[in-house]
Image (cartoon, rainbow, N blue to C red):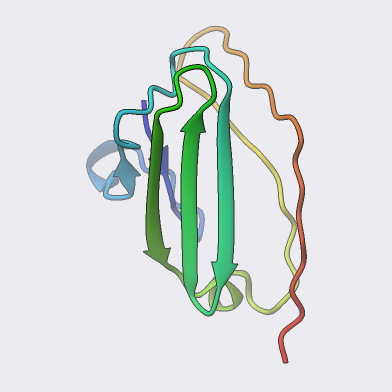
Length: 103
């Protein structure tokens, strides 16, 4: 299991799964609580994962022009998840969003 950063309605399924990335030694299917931190500024999205049960971390940077993707400086933030199985559980806790107003 990994994470995918896709925009503009892309699903990452089939032959066009170019955005799929394995987050280092983090096992998203382990059942361990995993902290995910996202920081965005000036076209750079910093992504950090930390498995809180064993201390394993992974981080990366992705270039993405979010205002271009969402068509301005206002957007909705949400979560979606699926694993292709009949049942799965995703728990999101301690979510915080700090909005930045452009100059």
